[in-house]
Length: 402
Image (cartoon, rainbow, N blue to C red; front, side, top):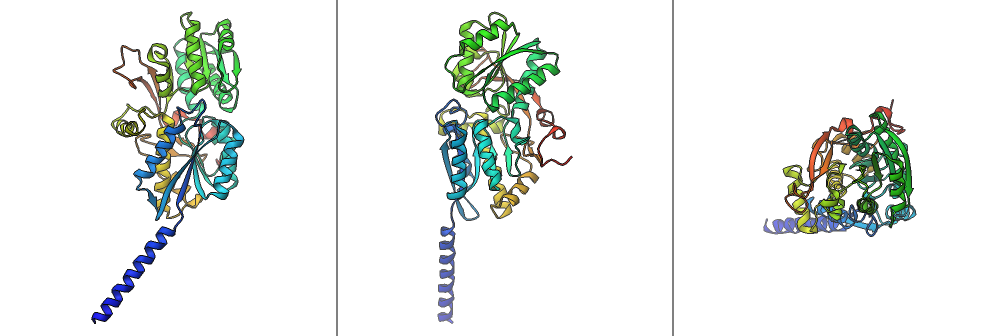
């Protein structure tokens, strides 16, 4: 009997050891982040988004389905061909199961085509072009944080209603800027405004003087900045130096982040209206997560960075529930499961891949109103998710049944 027991124990030990070895032999679950690590959007996404992705993997326990979670990060240098090549290499040769962020619209659209061709999941936080879930939609692509429609609806509507009856746009000359100008024009005109003209600039422009001069000459009451990151910061700084706002014109920042406000400083940024999906100090949950991020990164998170954590966590939960990384099975669960976290309290993923959630209109505080560094916003209005994004009935996405 003792011999049998010892034999059984030895067999059980051998089985346990074999199971452990098999678990160790499982390949890692690789998730990729394609980011702007060195260009005009590096502060918005970049190393901060890489940190948010790493936090999501760690908070999940570091593994799922017995596979270690491995987070990769690459710089696309704001070149669509680099983003496309990276996505292709990761999917075809590196075993990456899903890609997140892909800051900037042209690069995101390039990665989107690769993901669609390979039936892979793409969760986008940094880009803004509404066409991502419109004409260019894919069955496994989700646009998580914001888009040009939601940004323009919040800021352009508010600025026009507050006396901005005429507009001039200074626009980044690529997909994101064009979409943002188009959407802002729609909402300005819907509220009685008119557009007097626009000037388009290349990405990462060092000098906006000629564009600002055109805006001043136009006589428009609002100068809409349809750009982002370093371009928006440079434009606002030079507009202040030009005395543009002192002459009676107002600036409308159509995509801004707390990192931009910190770069500008409250004396320059005070009074700016902007629309965001996330602010670190809005709720107890957002404060708690943001403080953890700050402890690691020494900066408060942008909306894009918080979105990376939210989207990756939702993906990992769906993988766990599906018991598989199969894109169809995982996306089905992602779309069936509401998003309730520090980023979005009532988020849902539509058929076109748009993650619908509330958006918020903020105004930048004056130095006197602020209690200290990073205390930059005051909430002006909450825009319910059902009103913030392009109605599904107007979608051009071929996945939407009408």
